[in-house]
Image (cartoon, rainbow over the protein chains, first blue to last red):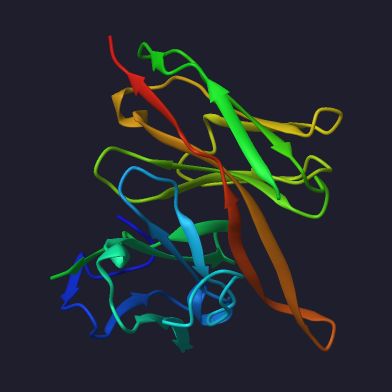
Length: 110
Length: 129
């Protein structure tokens, strides 16, 4: 059971927008920044968002992030088939003194 | 361009010790938190622990009794040992570079910006008798 809660799956058509939620508590999301990772099949995770809403170099502006209270959201606009992947949220948990992840959300681009 | 290269035994028997090493190429070794994350087949990511260049560690409470992460700054390498493995430890193990910046307000740390920006390719470890 993951510390952070994500929906198991989301889907949308090419060109559309999708959002993925991540819920936590005051000890993790509530008081720390959130990061998001994209994992394409058979590959290592890749950072797409850090500090709640910052895109690392090379990540297209179709990817966005936001945080409110103890929840965070990843948004992807202009969906492409290449965006099909598992997406994970992550943050620091101040009570555990440990990194924590969500259970992952499988994005299907129909 | 920082790269992480990891290696270690891929097949273990129950009760043996898992041992993996990750080498850091092309960047500074200090100022980061060198981390291990694992992913069981078909499941999500699990954070195992981290170490900085000074040897300070943090571990996942659920694994703490069996895990040791160490660092060799002369070689820019860090290692993971997980003892008394069982089939439940079968997973792909990743090493990663962690960044953790404290957010300070009036001299008090109010939280952290924490993320992993460079990952190794992963090592598949199977525990089977």
